[in-house]
Image (cartoon, rainbow, N blue to C red; front, top):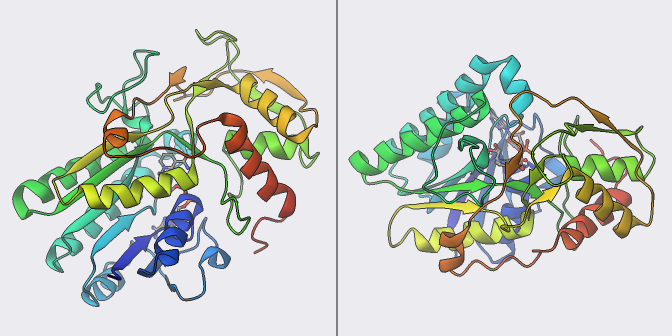
Length: 328
Ligand SMILES: NC(=O)c1ccc[n+]([C@@H]2O[C@H](COP(=O)([O-])OP(=O)(O)OC[C@H]3O[C@@H](n4cnc5c(N)ncnc54)[C@H](O)[C@@H]3O)[C@@H](O)[C@H]2O)c1
């Protein structure tokens, strides 16, 4: 049976891949996005785009009043760790503040299910072992803390108002829709894989590798890269799992790859050299972030793109074919 969903931030990188998956299976989707980092061109025909900001409480209220909604997926956020360390209050207000206003409006309009894009950045990084959902929470950045505050707000919305939540903590989202329609287009780009690809394609100068003295095998930081289509699939599974209760899942492949290993993967996939130089560490960056995604796997999540080269290949194909991204 067709269902109806509101997706905040659905014109952004990860959100657009979920919107596509919902739309393809016949669900009705409304995207709410102010396009500050998203792209109208990513929204498929047949999906309504409401251009507006979450800070506009009256508009959010009007949109939610036009229900019923089977669930709200909340992707819209500022999401740069470094920026959040320069403007912490902006992150707390825009992410946590607006997120809480959205949850409150959902409660008032009878929305029963809320799915949050959360992050690995809320964990205390005291170990290089895979991080389970119940690991210690101690965000090292205002960005991570802003997501933790929304997670807590959802706890209370569930406890007191009976709203079901899914808190999905992505590790490093990467890759692109293998059909070539969707991809990653952040401006400026801050994510490693597209930056390495652009370096290989000669679209930028030598890549800065931030930190060569981490306690990792090659000294560079290690991350768990997870394909956006696998993230979209996990959202669909979480929606079903919410029938049984609230959901908190870590989403990653459980395999760590260093910056130098990502560079090597791009060189393998593209056949092109990647010039790079070593630079100092950045504030707020952890040495190792790798997910233990046992809960999602127990619910049937089987990433299709578990290998780094397969993730890089889809990203490379999209970026090579779209030198201007979505072109807007
Ligand atoms: N990309 C990752 O690796 C990653 C990792 C962990 C968590 N996340 C989280 O996943 C979500 C999506 O990330 P992404 O990489 O797709 O980011 P993105 O910047 O591509 O997408 C965010 C979207 O939200 C919109 N938006 C932002 N603030 C808004 C506001 N106030 N009102 C309306 N629209 C607004 C933007 O225009 C954009 O379309 C974010 O919440 C992010 O914190 C991402």
